[in-house]
Amino acid sequence: MPDSILDKMRLDWDARALENARYYVNTEREDWTDEQFFQSGERTVAEEILTDMINICQGKNPAEMRVLEIGCGAGRVTRAIARQFGEVHAVDVSGEMIARATMALANQPNAHVYQNNGMDLSVVPTAPFDFAFSTIVFQHIPSREVIHNYVREVARLLRPGALFKFQVQGDNTLNTEADDTWLGVPFSDAQAVEMAEQCGFEPRHRHGVGEQYFWLWFFKK
Ligand SMILES: C[S@@+](CC[C@H](N)C(=O)[O-])C[C@H]1O[C@@H](n2cnc3c(N)ncnc32)[C@H](O)[C@@H]1O
Figure 1 (tube, rainbow, N blue to C red):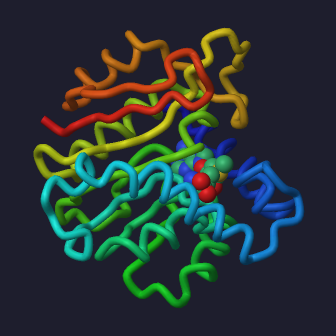
Figure 2 (cartoon, rainbow, N blue to C red; figure 1 turned 180 degrees about the vertical axis):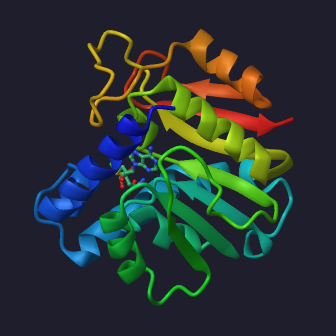
């Protein structure tokens, strides 16, 4: 993995966090209040997680589940996950984003955030996780190799049978560039299936092929 792209992801996201973190996390508004920003995280969890608890919990009590999140940004979704599950551990490549997430999660002792190197989960405690989640993160990563590495890393940390629900860029008509940290590499349906097979997952459901929000339900083999 070239260090240069990892450095660029960190530097670009640090700069975005310093300019207007909440806007770059969720571009719906430039002037988020605390309440609006965290409410939008509650909405994401309501739409993508609470509607899907059968796949996510598989009979487990959410209060006893350990959740992993990739690309937590300013803690928008992490905070809402922490309100539903026993523990959440989240990584982000940007120290500036992690500083904001740490503040957002000050009253959530069951939420833990770590700055990572932009490609693996070696900073995360290795006890098995019951569910992993990532939204509006991989759509910004320009390297297919980095995304594959994350998916392999999630497989390393999930218990067998557990779900990794995440979103990638599905719009193959985009002209993406190798060092663009805003417009990430797109995945076709075949590329998503191939990634699951190479990284130890069964790609049981997919939604949004060809669209920006291409959601994948990967179950750990
Ligand atoms: C658009 S924000 C979304 C944040 C959060 N998922 C949310 O929905 O509120 C994208 C986040 O992904 C992080 N990110 C980008 N590339 C990353 C990488 N290679 N590894 C870890 N985090 C990354 C950025 O620092 C940023 O905080």
